[in-house]
Amino acid sequence: MIVRQFLQWVRSAPPGERAEATSALARAYLHSDLSSDDLAAAEGAMIMMLDDPSPLVRRAMADVFASAQKAPPIVVDALASDQFDVAEPLLSRSPMLSIDDLVDLVATGQPETQAAIAGRVMLTPPLAAAISEVGSAESCLILLENADAEIALFSIDRIVERFGHLAAIRENLAARDDLPMTTRQALLSKLSQTLAGFVTKRHWLGPEHAEYAAREALEKATLALAAETPYEEVPELMQHLRQSGQLTAGMILRALLSGNVVLFEEALAELSGVTLDRVTSYIHDKNISGFRALYSKAGLPDLAYPAFREAIAAMRDGILIGEQGDVARLKRRLVEHVLARCSQERAPETASLLALLRRFAVEAAREEARIFCDDLMAYDYIEAEHRMVA
Image (cartoon, rainbow, N blue to C red):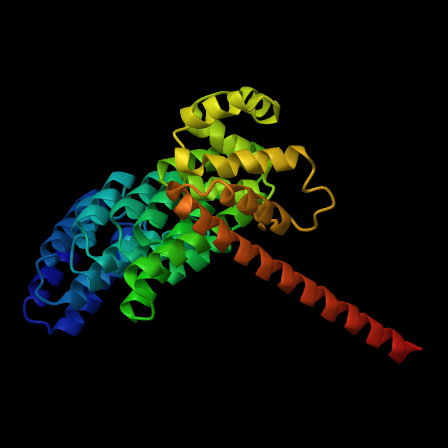
């Protein structure tokens, strides 16, 4: 009876009143003690109201059914596919939308639809995977900021791959303490690419110079990251660097000249396919022929071999004994020693290697000078404090 009166009245009522009446009918469907006939009639009336030309009417139903677990499924599905202003409450929190429904809405929806879904509570890994794969940058950021979302690592890696060039995405991920080093290194790589593109666009550096500067900065940052990597994660980091094309002879030589033997050994094991124990024995064996064979098997360029050979020999002789600083910094004595020995060969094909070693030597000298000055300033500050106390 009530539904019949509603249908008669709604035909001539203005939009605002139709919205209020439809909202009341939806609440009655959920909360009133209606007979089965009245429930069926109310559902039919609401299905009819899905065709109402005013979004106010459809939004009124969406607001009522947003958190309901017993709303008419047909009505919920239709409203969830409506224009965003109507669908938003259901997209954000309706428990009646299945994972499959939500994944489909992410795949076919507009960015605002994806963003609304990304903020849902108790968001599951399959839905997070869908958002990370096809969602907009905004929806991916909302997903990362959603404390209730359960996000698999491969989904985070996909977000880094798609949107790691965006500062907001990088800052969110960098602040996490549960990311593996491979993901952190991928963020560094994205930052490097972004900076290179920025300075090139601004015409501060030419494309080649910008690319080189960015690559060098990335290598330094990667070595610093590797120095903080737990030992058990180093092989995974090496695999990531190889697969992304970053495990180059230049990076490996930088690691060796920084005294990071662990990274050097793991890199050779990754590139050569030889077990780490055998790699270690070849490196520390005084018979250089074993290392030479390992070096070739790793696919490293013959041009750079003399630098590796001289660095290993110098380290066996104890050149780094008493050396200060961590394994993320080039060691000046070692670099200058290798440069001097390689310079003696004077072969035309070593020009590029010598140029790289000279850049390493300048970098090492500047870093050593900076550390010296910092220590000197710190000493003067402590002395001044002692004088004031006295």
